[in-house]
Length: 278
Ligand code: C2E
Ligand code: CA
Ligand code: CA
Ligand code: CA
Image (cartoon, rainbow, N blue to C red):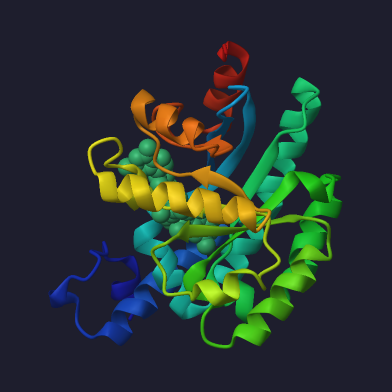
């Protein structure tokens, strides 16, 4: 077991043995990662499409694993979720993200938003409202500048319980968004009962604009529906000016994607803000 802990781990490598052994290895590596501060946040700008000003940033976690480089969140978040370590990692993310936006808004005398992703486990099991409140108090930020992203899938199952959790979070005064909208299985009939401010249209519906007329119809319909429900819309994965034009013509408020910027480390982000021209 000692050897196993030190060996280089390959995700889903069959020679490593059972799934149970694998998760033990990763779990201990993730514990090490927490202890040795191997996590880092990157921040992706979100742009107000009408005014072209910077609206805020989404915090996206990275794992800088010694000898292996950066492990993408799609790989380790699900494992952290299974082991429950996501709760601790997620609290670190919340804390760091709040401290980041506090520094940035002080530095630029601005009121940028910071969006933070929650995992299902954080949303359902942990005392998430307490963790959010603690992070805001520690960083001395106003609740209005924090946007909590939950996915559609997390809201399925026990709807009443999910709504109660969302109401607890909203009661803190923070914003609440539904991430990856359109890719989960939530029923539209529940949408009106969700106390959310924002829908994030998944990149899947954005990426083929302006070539796929079906995706354009779906995106336009999501935007129109969100507005009728008094929600704002953020389009994800915006990569071209044609997409911006289409989204803006359809009154989508915010765009986020490689066209504006990739997710950036804090230092790069500061120079992005300093050099940003409308
Ligand atoms: P997400 O929340 O949907 O985040 C958007 C992902 O799309 C990010 O990938 C971002 O880098 C990528 N992206 C942004 N713009 C573009 C674009 O124009 N084109 C393309 N092709 N991709 C774009 P990333 O950073 O690898 O994160 C992947 C997922 O990992 C996130 O998807 C989210 O579900 C999860 N994740 C990331 N950070 C956290 C975190 O702190 N906590 C939790 N629970 N999950 C996280
Ligand atoms: Ca997100
Ligand atoms: Ca998303
Ligand atoms: Ca997505």
